[in-house]
Amino acid sequence: MLRCSNASLLHGPMTATTIRPRTRRWTYADYCRIPPDRNRHEIIDGRHYVTPSPERHHQEVLVNLVVWFSEHLKKPGLGHVLCAPMDVHLGRGSVVQPDIIVVGKANRSILGDKKLTGTPDLLVEILSPSTRRYDRKIKLERYERAGVREFWIVDPDAELVEQFVLRKGRYGEPVVSGDSIRLRIVRGVSIDLAEIW
Image (tube, rainbow, N blue to C red; front, side, top):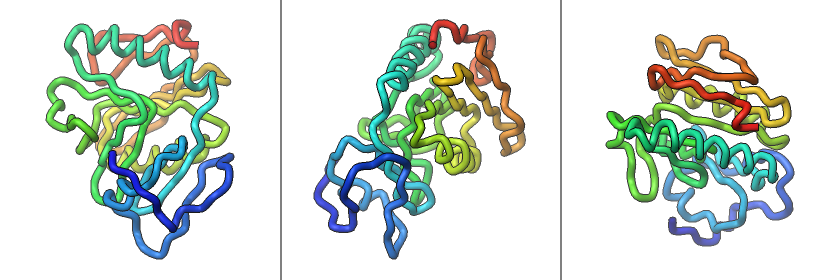
């Protein structure tokens, strides 16, 4: 991805999700000009959010989940499994980098070489101390509006997964479990969460 310097960026260490101030809405072109800095940059509804790179335990859980999804979805040919950093363009003014992205084979037209354009079937966000409110509110609401069929919030500290399933355009109350989760985007597939923690 092309990145170049951007005078509107703030400087200093990132310790929590930060909204970068700006007088006009951010676009994908603006996003592509952000220089690499080891932070995660996302645009939601034209607002620029920045989070620091995650901690080790977050990354270990991420790797375990990616391996599991690859074994149970990618290998049998049920879909594609990707992980951050990978841009997901959810529409004008919204580019996100979920921790894990699952795209069913019937939905593969959204896959591009540098980004996904459209709505993935399943997105997973793994909580960090700096992203709890951001993942639970801002991202959850944006994924719901985009029509993401299934969304997981993974809490590695509590060893729990909250599974949100889209019904009639809305996420209802999540299924919360530390033991196992039955995928909704694929029939007959469940994950034993003991393999993840």
